Length: 178
Image (tube, rainbow, N blue to C red; front, top):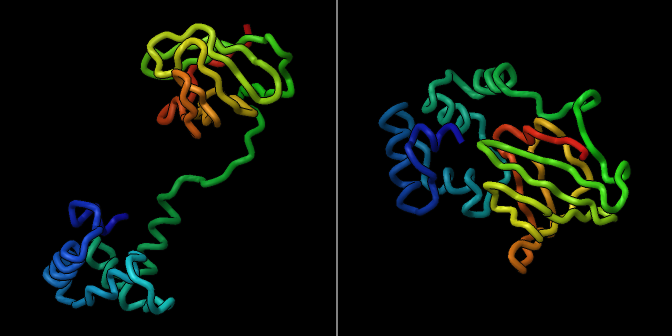
């Protein structure tokens, strides 16, 4: 959140809210009550309405004239949150037969050969420089080049991990059927 970034750290404790309120007042010459801030952050239950004045003060704290200016900035600056992915290189499990092998890789130098087991299950066959180890298994339904690979039910070293992600920043840099 922009206000926490300006404040310098995550706002969690009662004392954080007290210090945060004092910082807002120092910067804007406007007061927001600790409980108002705590309600806005979801730390206490209370009124479901947030007054525009409260949002305006927070926006002035982070360098905008008012709430509407901040919203306009977000609309102009934000990345697309959804997209229809038509031309990207991808492999769906429906396109695979048990025993098919894929080479996947992600930065900085992770490379794994995985074998499709059927259903949505893959088994790691040959892994280099990765947390994923030979013999690990996981489930997924689609692999897309240049997008992160999110998998379910990773069995790693004999232990079940609910979720695991590969290539979070740059996605899969290698995706090829062998």
